Each structure stands twice: as structure tokens, then as C-alpha cells.
Length: 594
Ligand code: ARG
Image (cartoon, rainbow, N blue to C red; front, side, top):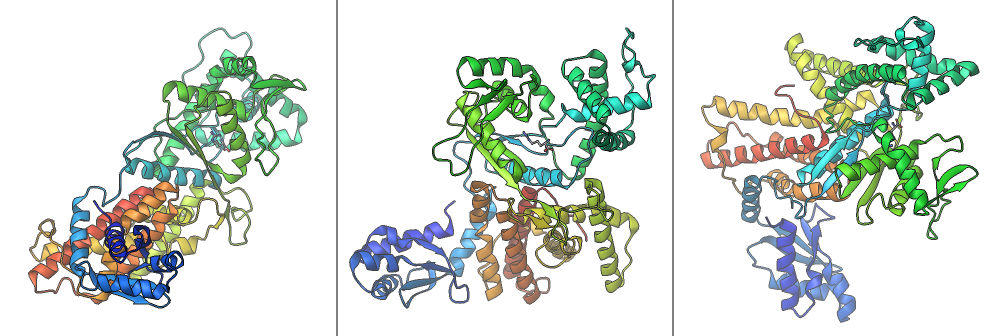
């Protein structure tokens, strides 16, 4: 479906041609001065230079040609040479009619859909999830949904950190605590038990304890390294333990990610990449991509055009150990073998940017990934507390994701209680328990996604959970408000489903709402192109504001004129659908009541 901006641009371009100027000057954009007009064309300013005329003269000519054009309610030239445009209500109404009938609300879906892998989440097995992992999960999930909305085949992979030192630490700590476990008996020949030797809560306690201990106790640290090495070389007892640790931890992680409405298609991890490493390194050496340097194996990735120093990518240490990069490269080998995507998107802390540049360049240089495949890195900033320092618990420890969610949910509950008290209604516990997690999630995700990913932001529970302002709960509140109007309409004995014909705008606020509605495709396409969920947030916030403004000025339920009321109901339904689509792209949904 043709966009409003394209339709107007087409008409203006023809008018420029009719007046003897080049077509390209007819380009129209949104108005910089919404108080004066809705759209504007600045082409006369540029044409003035080319045709050596006063800009206002050109603008006058073009505006005169279009004076009675049916598309415009008003088209005027203003000094020094702008063309200010207001479009006619009838046209806008027809546009909304088309938008409501289009499954994607007018968005241009990818002509050539791509297969895309999004690597996000990145939790580490057996270690607690913290706020840093929150951002990866929240941003990655939204990117995945946006890419999918535009028709692509998207595979989300959690890429677990499941093959590192944490495993050796847990194994050795467990060894000391429960030395009689069969896993530690070198003479044991039988099958290893099916039941895990520890629960998730034991694991959550054991890892931090072992980690602290390893910093104070060098001998223990050494043992943990050795245990990790033994595991990585396939020791059967340690592999059996590792599998237990994996299943206990994965079940817990799934629970947490479910709570966040974050769903992965693949639950792969670093361990899955290990079998590919030996051949990969051998191949890189044989092709002269990798070479030995001081006993280690490295790949040069610096380019003449680099502004900053680009160190070589280290893929094997001199002691034979592989590294983070080795595992990421081998993961690419596996992904190419199994999926052959045309695009990769990695979502991690922005401090890993240089690292990923090294990995991407190595992958292309070694021919692991085709030159034509796009490899994108989305680096996010830090979640800070109000003091501007990384967000911590009240006691100063690392904030765990569950606690963060509880903190938000608690704040939402208190707000709802307060609202209920103001309205003098009672808040049913059961009802609140259903609503709070949905509202809490909107606060958490919107608070994050409304920022540009690369920016740090301040985790402000009070602000994020507010029902007013640029927040998730405000957007939900708007949707819930529409749902309640539609309910009232139904109670009048009318069927909202049957209200499908739009009505031309009757007031400024109604027209403003309609103009914002038709902008959805521009906002969504920008979010898609730029991999920027914050553009969706900005848009749904504008739409919510415009809707609420319209709502406060309009008596929808009391309207007697049938066609008008039906037009408004059609409008409300479309606003609701677009808002719901927006929050779905962000990864949350609205309750029926709030
Ligand atoms: N597990 C890593 C961490 O906690 C993040 C993994 C990111 N993805 C990747 N392919 N390296 O920092």
C-alpha cells in the first residue's frame, strides 16, 4: 500500500515538473512545525540554487498549481521558500481504511526474506543471571521479533556460556563438600547416577562461594583449572557431572527467560562448538590465515583503514588452551554447516565490540563465513543506579535478575493499590496477581528499550513503573482504556466487529491521531532498518499521547450519530491493534484490566 508521504511527494514532484523544474525537488517530509502544517516540502530552497531564482518565487509557483488539488486541505508557500501542507480529511480516512485492511498496517515487507541468526541472551550456566544479561535478552528478543515481522526467517540462539572455568570451580567445590560422591572415586566403574547431586539453590550458592574462594586460595584455583581441563578433555565422571549441572541450570534459566517472555529457538552453547575446533584451526593454518606467534596461534585482522589499534585475534594459547574467540569461531563453523544464514546479529555488552570485530574479520578471512553475509554487532550500555554507577543491590552486591523483577513487581503492586484507593475500589488479590507481572514486564522492557541500545541508562524503578509519562505501563494503560471503551460499546448492544468504516476527522485532536497512525510504517521500517527498537517505543508513545488527547476531548460512547460513532470505534480498534503490534515487537503484552 502506498504511503502518505509517497503519495504527496508524487503530486509535488509532478507540480515541480509542470512549473519547469526537476522532479527531485518534490520530496516531502514530516513538518518541523506541527503548529503550522502537517507536511512540508523544502525543494524550492534547493531548486533556487540550481535555477538561480528566489526560493519563494518557486514555492509560490508550485503552491499555486496545487491550490485546488483534492489531496490537500491547504497548501501554501511561506518565506523564505517552504511549501507547507495540510492534507484533506477524506484522503486520510481512506488511507486508514487501507491500513486497517492490510495485515502489516502498511509496512513494506521484505521482498527477499533472509535467514538471520540472532545470538543473544548469552547466560552462563551455573552462574546467576544479572542485569547485564537482562539487556541482551530484552534487546535481542525485540530485534528478533522486528526482523520476523518484516518477513524474515529468524533463529534466536541463547549461546550459553557452558564450557568455562565455572564448571571446574563447581566440580572442585563439590568435591570438597561431598568427597564420597562416585564422580570423585577414581576406581568407580559403574554407571553414573541419573539424579543430579545438587539442586539449583545449592548450585546458586556453590558457584559464588567457589569463585570467591579461588581468588583467595591459589591451590584451589589451580585445582579448578585442572578440573576444567579434565572436563574439556572428556573425562567421563566430569562429563556426567557437567550434564547434571547443565540440566539443572538450563531448567532454571528457561524459567527466568519465560518470565521475561524471551524465547529461544536454539539452546546451544559454547560446548556445542568444541568438536569443530581442531579441524578449524588446522584448516586456518593450512590456508595461511593463522600462524604461530610466540607459541600461540593468531590471525592478523588489522586493516590499513583502522583508526584504532586492532590486535591480532588469538585462537590458541601457547599452552594449547582455546579461548572465547576460538569457541565463537567454531560456533560459526557449526552455524554455517547447519543453517547458512545470510545475516548474523550479536547482542552483547558494548565492551565486546573490538572483540567481535576481530571475530567477524577472522571468520571472513578464514572463509568460515561468506563475504556477502552481513555480520552485525549490537553493543549495549550499562544499567546504572541513580548514583550513575552500575546497578547494585542495597547491600552493594551484583543485582540478580529475579530480584530486579521482584523489585519492579512490588512497585507496580503498590501503584495499583494506590490507584484503587484513589478510585475507592478494592483491589482483588487474585486479579492483581495476574496483572502485576504483565505491567512489571512492560516497565522493565520499555524502560530498557526506549533508550538507544548503545546508551547507558538509569534503572529508576519509580519512573519505569509510573502510569504516566514515557513508560511501559502508560502504553498498557492506553490499550486497557481502549478495551474498556469497546466493552462499553458492546454493552450498548452494539458489535465493535461491525464498526469497520472510518469517518473523516472532525477535530484537530482526531486528525492529529490519524496522522500519527499512518506514520506507523515509517517508524517500524526505521526500527527494522536501523536495528533500533527505541524507534518503536518513541512511536507508540506518540500514538498513546495523541490517542489520550483525542479521548479526553471526545464523547465516544454518548455519540448519537451512528456513522460517526462507528468511525470512532473503527479508529479505536486500529489504534489498539497498532499499539498491540508495537508492544509485541518489544516483547510484552497488555492485560485486559489495570
Ligand atoms: N556468555 C557471555 C557473557 O556472559 C556472552 C555471550 C555472547 N555471545 C557470544 N557469541 N559470544 O559475557
